[in-house]
Length: 306
Image 1 (cartoon, rainbow, N blue to C red):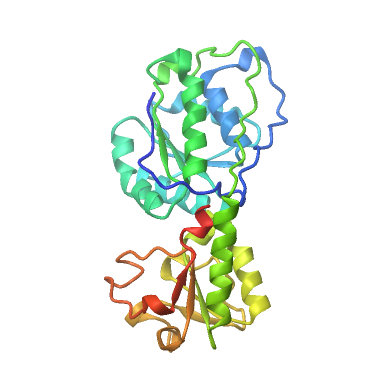
Image 2: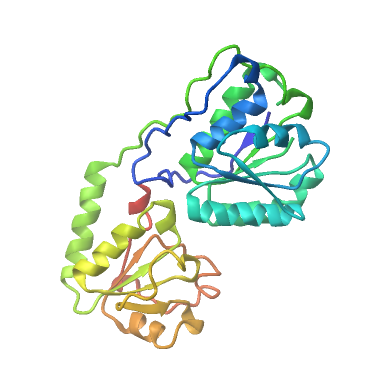
């Protein structure tokens, strides 16, 4: 079985600032149901996935039958694999993790663009296609799911259709859990002190939220800082939807020359700006054309990854 991720960046679990144990399923378990497909279905339910998106095909029908039979798991069928991928992408944005099932080979190729988009947006998305070695299949499934949650990146699980109904387990499997991830306390304190000193010297600082607010589950903390400090704030284009845009301190979307009216002027003319969870790529920066001064900028891009 293949369980792959190309991420080298370590980020917290999307379910919280500190990765905690995933609640166990309360679904009754019987030995007759101890199959590889059932194990995968139970793992998805345990990490909070209630809807799985798929295009039914001859290679994945056996797995989909087991998903349909799993209490707490709902199968949503789409018209093609690209729609499946983007539906799972949207689900991951709103629920923290998403999952999709496609057919072998051609389905995996068709869903590739959506998976690439989820990778660029740091979304934990589990793509299941159709385990070469049955004896360690459950171990690799757990590793893949853990990697998706820890790295906040997509993973790919390939399962041979003839192995899905195989009675893999003769006892109830251990509930799926993740070890807690702790911050570097000294680094965190140093970052907070540096940010406080930077902001206290400013006359009219502005906050700008980026897409990694979602990864760090820091949207609430961002708004608490905005409310307590009375700073005006904006979002980067890939951070839209993460903070309430009806807030009286919200000034718009900061997107260089195509920003909301007066938003770019306010941010670029201020004496200090605080970027929280930004990604300065060609999309967010309009081809790296933002008129920002390093001297005025305090970025929390790395802080939320501690």
